[in-house]
Image 1 (cartoon, rainbow, N blue to C red):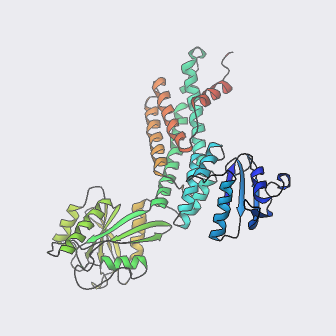
Image 2 (cartoon, rainbow, N blue to C red; image 1 turned 180 degrees about the horizontal axis):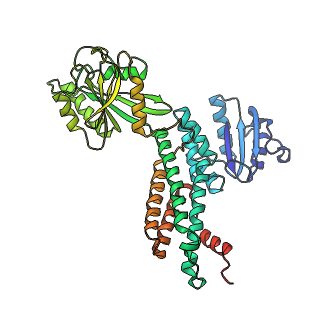
Image 3 (cartoon, rainbow, N blue to C red; image 1 turned 45 degrees about the vertical axis):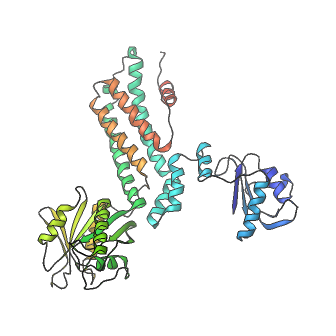
Length: 429
């Protein structure tokens, strides 16, 4: 299919098909020949015309559906260029839809998220954002903030009205309700961020503790070579799995030890680089020996702030049952990578670390900029609460909070607030 967007496309369609412009009906598929410059048919297909503003971009839109052969479609594309069209830039159709108020920024980004979705949960969340669910939640918060700002700033601008905003309008209670709604939305957005990027998990530990076996178990296939020879894994192996719709990027690495093997040393250096980029490190140890001095040395070198889970592997050989327990505040999971016993404990622990709750039906597929805006709005609302006794400072913090929220959808300006004030207050009485 070839899509054309612009102004006044009926003459364009007539030139392409040879049919009179008045015969082309809106939103109705028409069978037509697509003609070359010599009036010879390049292809025969369906023509659909969507007049402005009732189209995806808000402009006139033509959709040309041909037989799909690459040569034929290239000829048809070339003919469209001859008639005055140009090739669209990346994302230009969504950009035009945004500029023509057919969607806001959050919805426009959801188009790309839907295309790039790698899991069913991510795709469903993207569809919800595209339909405006995320935007409506933001708009509800902005409406609450606008009303609160309107009341406070009216007092600043018209003190002779003697409106005691804090007492008569329950400003503190309104702000608390706003903060609660904002925190709920932020949690949903954080969950959605996981659906987009997933969790990066590095398997680390001494040689022959079962890192490659665990990768194979999680992947459900023999992705890594497993032998009794220490140092078999020389380079990082990557595999992405899904647990409850969350992408988990598992990275198997070379065993950490002192070695004279030059190739193995390179693999170990790469292991530490992968660890530095990880969200979670699964430090594997042998259940039969427990955490050894060498394991403690590895743990001490792990970067601060990275979540670490100690996986005591080979519980089947030690004739012990799978279990989750904590020792000195550190989570331990006892399991068997080879036999699969206890893997469900690992799945549950990884979801806990990720902060995942539920089954993703309430999450919003948020981007990093959305999270930053929500966090900034939350911080400004807290500052506003601290300055409730100083109306000028409170009003400024609320303005900054609203500005942060409005960046998500790309809306709101100073005139909007003035419009609310003058439409809701009887200023001149």
